[in-house]
Image 1 (cartoon, rainbow, N blue to C red):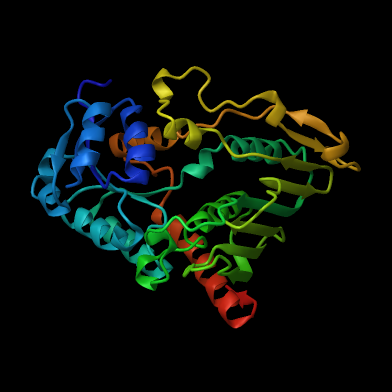
Image 2: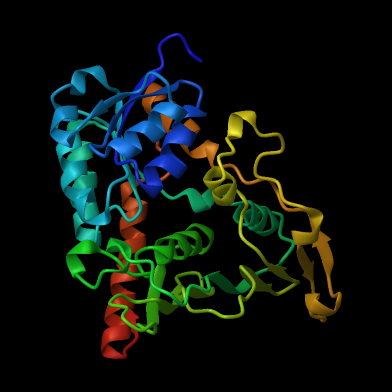
Length: 357
């Protein structure tokens, strides 16, 4: 740990705060989790067990009142609170990390980016799936030219959850910013834009399939990128047989990868990056395959070792940006570009049209 670590306030200690942000902040050299905003006593007890010495605040306003004691605030509360809390943090003079989606609209995201720029403060969005093991591997394959010119990118974030779990993520109230298009869609759209650049055309199909559901739970998005690549993205809670996480087709070869990055499951089970050997690694049996002319199901192609996933890299990048004044690992403007696509997808699915951007 550096001599004077940057002090972090965390707003929210539900799934995002307790499983992702708190452990990753704590694993980052140069950062210390100082204060958690939650009035839930059960969650406080959980945090005390995990983070001895951490302080608590009942409300975000209590945090802003002591803004001078902090160097960064992380917003990990429900989606509908992201914009007002990020605005309040910046106005209190604090750099901010906001969980995805940063906002419900691209316009709101750009307004936040402009406010942070005006105040000279860092604003970043937590898009942890940029550090998934399969995504890092795919980026390396593309950079090395092993696929040739990529023509089609298929990305699936599918689950089999026929029963509703309840909560705001499944709410049909637009102000809750729920549904899979904003949840898992934020990941698959962001990854597609990182790999292949701006979108110029969007088509989408979005359905509410489960009994009693109020928000989209089965969504397909087709993106045409400015460079000509076509991305086909799937986000679903109703997939009885899961497809490959990635199928990427190029002029020289294709890459097919099944299974999810292991880091979320490890964090949920209590594993921590600093104390877990071989963090982010997966067994050889889950490696993807690269080849042409034969299906990987029947042995086509050759196995490609999957690079280790690296969620800790996100907060390491945030700490570096704060200390050196550089670009954060994910910018609000990048998040706004993804929201342009998500808003276009909503319009496309609603009106049955293709949307030009």
